[in-house]
Image (cartoon, rainbow, N blue to C red; front, top):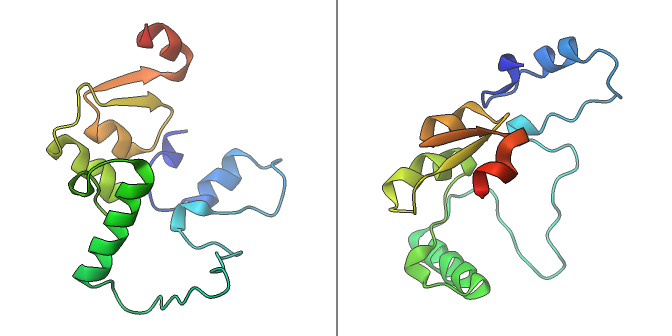
Length: 124
């Protein structure tokens, strides 16, 4: 199963490990969805340019309001990989725990790794 724990695809390895799995396969590891999100009517979205600083600030402010936290506690990042790697730098409470099985990055940033089967016991 180790072949499937790193970000970046490997659908060929998954297909080889699970030849009897239902078809077609949907590879979500690439971030390319064959059924992409469609913005609701009235919302203009231009996916070509990168967001500017003011757009990111508005996004973070709206997310902060939605989650009921201060805006400085919200960071828009270009994906979960970046967010995971930032966790140790953000002063979040320790330990940072990765539950196995998981992707490789989860274990890299974690200060503790626990097996899914013992999660309830570990949490106390």
